Length: 571
Image 1 (spheres, rainbow, N blue to C red):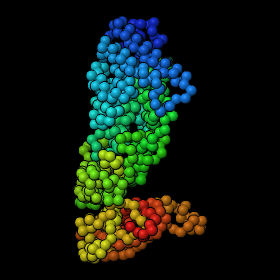
Image 2: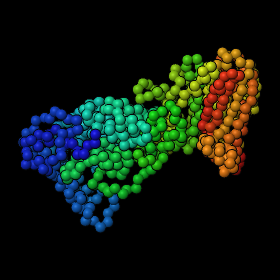
Image 3: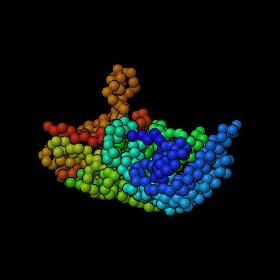
Image 4: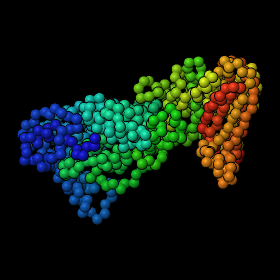
């Protein structure tokens, strides 16, 4: 359901009953969304409300006339009459609030006008003293705190607002989350009932949360602040006899900039900042545990979202994350090297890894403080699939993030399984490790310090590849066949056919296969020395396959990005 007219306040419903003479002026200003019990209003209170709305209506008219008369005007800044008259409108609203302290319309614009005039401390104070509908008071408090930059206070206020919000209002507000979605998740959201949307929007905000290390969700607060701004904006439009429809909500909810709250008091041609896209794309929203870091392009020019939060730019954070089977549990290893990152010069970094299973439940949080050159998480967890968010925040230098799903590759029906292959910094020491234990294989602990904390590598670089094989002991096999392939991500059947017909250039596939003896033990680690192929820059799959005679192969892969060789050779 899309609201076509802004809904006003409880006292206005009584105003329409008691004063039919002003019904034309006040038409469309019905009860606040979701409010069903109206407080009795005296004729005096209706008269006060009518007077303050008349004053606001005059202000809107004068602003419009002043703007139309100007031959040239800077649409980035409020025009002169706004700077002069808005404080007087605020005084009028304050005087009316003394007589009607519980009126939702009055308190809403007392807060909204102060936010517009950048009197943010006053806006917070007025909202905190609100005596209107509890959900509306908390929503106004969330708006004031969010605009002032108090993220934690805004998050908590919006939590209280949603908890107190009438079910039909919450359902209506949740409907507008659909403007941010695309593909299958948009269809599923549109087909869901109110309870279904409530569950889906919690999942969406969990995925869209900019930083899981922080105890608040700035992206959700920005959305809810825009919704509060739309309520106020539509009430002002209603005073002029206008309507608010789906296109209005779409523009404000998705793009927001530049004047999602100011409306008629500023123009709409202010250059839009780049912003970020935090709401996940359709595939990630539907299957987050299958997402890779490249699926979440925060700087993608998005049709459905543009958000500019406190961090001007969020950089990519390179890392390698691998899951290893340990009985019924999983050993999780995350490594991120910061020595070449743009944030490396920050005096203080809030860094960490957060692994979560959903919006409910407690995530696993591993934190680091200070300026570490290398971030390592090595822990054992009960489940085998997580949403992983590797994050680094610098107070003045920006932030970096990598978010993706990770899980153990599925074993074959015969029980043969693999870990993901992980890339190592090659050295003579690693050569000795690889040859040191031919019976039991190579232990993960022996190579942990050599894991490269990045999935972006130069072509021609010499690296080690480590992986673990599971289930060989039960198969009683003496030998196993292993293959390792580097394949361009977009190397599909049509491309291979075109290459066979010599329509395209040489293959972007490099493959190696061999047979080796099966070592002892339930977990068998292996290290292979390899040189990354000289291929076109791009994204590639490092594919690993292991099989024994008479069994289907177990397969695992890692996505990497290969760049061109630099002037000084591979690094």
